[in-house]
View (cartoon, rainbow, N blue to C red):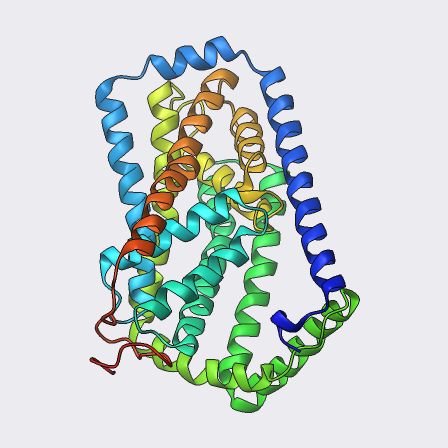
Length: 363
């Protein structure tokens, strides 16, 4: 049974679940922001923001643009032949959805398939790119608390919360690496993992009254062969650009703090990295779209706990989120509209045309 053939009752349950998820996310966001705004002096926060110079604002703007560009470079690394502008259009459009819609990450993945398919990439190549970029992103996100803790320890201090975050990061990183290594070790291991993942997914779908999945063992075997080829030729660029993307996000936060007056003596750069890494770790599960509310709460609590002034920290975090959460939404809406209106019929160089895609430049 396909998605289109699902019974009306299943479709109604799916829509009801989506509405309830959206309402829960909205209530949670409102509650978090209400709590935060009752604990800080908004007049002082606004004063800290308006005290910034035009030079500081211009530098922050350039950093924000660079940060957005790094997303495109990551996708260019995992998708051979994908040009910069197409990568920018795709990453900004999908990020806009992930930042605004409950369950937006899943919808964004669907948009990725649609966009890459319109440019001639087959579903199997898109799947490889999605999974490899996701795996590398997870590796770095889990490794950053460990790196941050080591840097803080070298500077002479680390609290229990940071140690716990680092331990969680180590455990998650080791688990992710082991699973990834087992999948690539042999076809038999990949097939076993696909069967296990398929059984787990089928049980979850059965609880929702949906048909079980099939063929996951074949998909994991195919993923293994494509991944080995991609990683063998591009692991350096994938690693470098993934790391640059994460560090660029951190630099935007660090500069925001310094521009509003939080000095290195109050909160050192290594402590900022530790708080940043912890916030990224605790918001790995998308409870709210783009981590709205959760990211702000985690960053403000962590940076104030590290010694920063509450009003200045709140001002820096709000600026940071405006540049890294709100700005991609605005740009992404424009990118999606552009993609919908463009007659881009020629596949990107190096793409393997999917069924029904233009055949002028087959790989």
